[in-house]
Image (cartoon, rainbow, N blue to C red; front, top):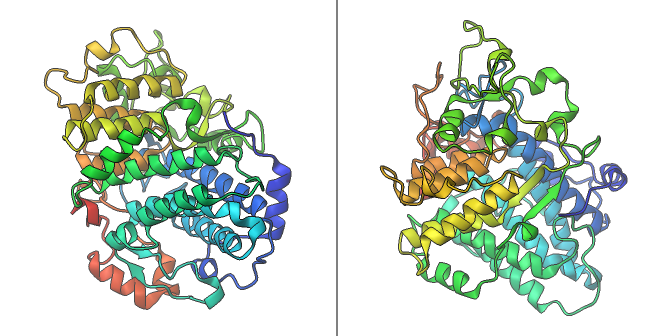
Length: 480
């Protein structure tokens, strides 16, 4: 597993390179020093993004994907996404870290001593940009990180361009790989809490991201040849020892954030009815890791609540519903901040094979992905799991449904991913929530934050016009 993040480096970086959630300052940041050592900045970008998005994934993403539901402070769970409460505002997380990553990239291109950072910085830029645009659609990108040129009002770029143009997601992944392959000096990559300076692991990471995002745009672009080449080259994340993750610890300050907050915040989130139904149907033992039996149970049963209750008129008893498992609070030492994993890559290839985008054994890839996912969540795979309802060709279910459902389960805490994949594929089937504030529709995108209308008004208005006044029911480009 990966390195434990030491708080000393974190504090040093907070002192030397302060961040802000203000979008204008994120893009201009004229006072931020450019002399921060890239090793400290790389450590900070990886840790801050992973920690922030793990928290966001639990308290907001998991609500959208219906892994869990909220008892109170739950406007987000009712799909009022313009009213974030305990979470639901990942915009500044992306822009703060993309800006800081751009400093690393610029340093790598202006100093031979820092050249080793160019490839990883390009790959991280592609990774974070993909997460941003997959959530919001069109976003400020090509002009958004030019602090040196004082670009305070960047235009919104089309998601298609962010994916496909020079300097975009796929191009930066390719350039990141080339930069690493061309690097011949002996100066090590320091501050790398994902791979401990292993540049070959960064290449596997980049190839795995290419696989993921080629599949994501496969309804819009012909990606078959490139996917086949990636599969044949066999240089991607293949087992859990190679995962792009870092470990949380079992104590402050590097434990999972929900373990550090008051118990009331943690207890606000319980097992969803959608999740318990799916896990029960599959006889899935991961339920024992991901959740606890509800307190009022006499036989260690699990109980879930339908998402999106109206907390002002519906009284529920916490003791009647299952809380998150001990891995999320009592002992977070085996919990990861997850960037991409072997099981996700195998599920992506299984989907590609099932759609005849590559020549490969879809069932074998699927079953390997399931096995890796159980191992990742420290759960024993039942001997008959892959021959009953979770079988690749189970009666009444399609291979695609089985693949995406397994990916959805494993993406618990990475809940935004489960929601994005649901919007892309329609799987697994989500339930109509209890008291929807969005006309019983599952949102298709995250809304731009309110401060954009003030700080970047002209460009925001143009983007809002394209999304029916910043509607959450307008699909992103690859989902049109």
